[in-house]
Image (cartoon, one colour):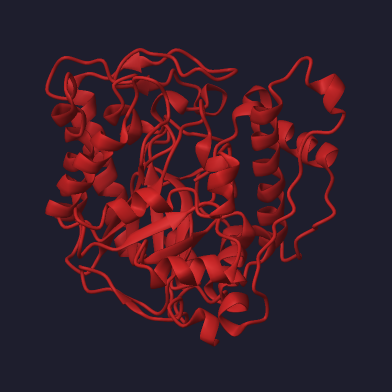
Length: 417
């Protein structure tokens, strides 16, 4: 610890009793390293062994899907029963000697499911297609199917607890199923699951209750939640605050603040320069939650790069935990580097599309840049999983080729945790 990281180095006690050794969280990043049967692999174990020794207080995995019939991308791990229990135990055991907590992010893609991977038509609260290239119009879920999905989240959490994970994070951001239920643009039902803000938030509350009922009192449950989806007529900050109020009343252990969807990818850095200068994209909203969640830790991910901004956010009480995403792909020990004073800034180079005058005529360059940058960082995760070091000189053409090979026709809407 250095004087400039005093607040970052402080431990944090979560409402459920879990103690984090410091204020750094490795946020969810979809690794795409599952095997053909959607189980964990030795590559995942090698990757997480690096993060286990990276100095973080909390590490959250990428998407662990609750239903193999509906997956977001190739290489998703799916946990819907105990068929991969031994592999999951090996994955969790990478943290056996670490002070850090290991949580699995559990998720259902809803209308963002990759039909080429799942071989099934996507399902969603309403039959409304997501506005992204290559998307498929979803089928609206029945009441019975919604109740069955809630139980799937609970089953997934229970299996992960048995495997040795310390907790789960519900993915309630970035346009996935929980977000779809919350959004009036995606959820146009007029039954117990939609029609007004109270009924739209019922799904996430029922998922939380089911997970709590299926797991022990020492198993942590957090959520990644949109501050808003930044779309006209969509999920608003006012509605998000009401969801936070309800989650706090249910005893949620941690709320990670994010925002946007893959239709409007604010979380990928599509923000105003004034916000970028403050580094943390959603810090202002997080600070505004203090009155609603005085005893519930708030994490903010997105944009943090300098020690000064990170430690300052904790010192000012704007958030309790600093989340790091893409920098951890090229600096797996990013937290340790900051805490030791080895560096005071994390710069992840990334890439963007070349030949811009030509490519810009046929592609949305901002959307393409976002997808390509994610693919470049996924390539780095695959190198770490293979026991190699990151390749900071990897070019955009190589990253583009890998993106197409991994995702096929869905390549231009690659998703992240």
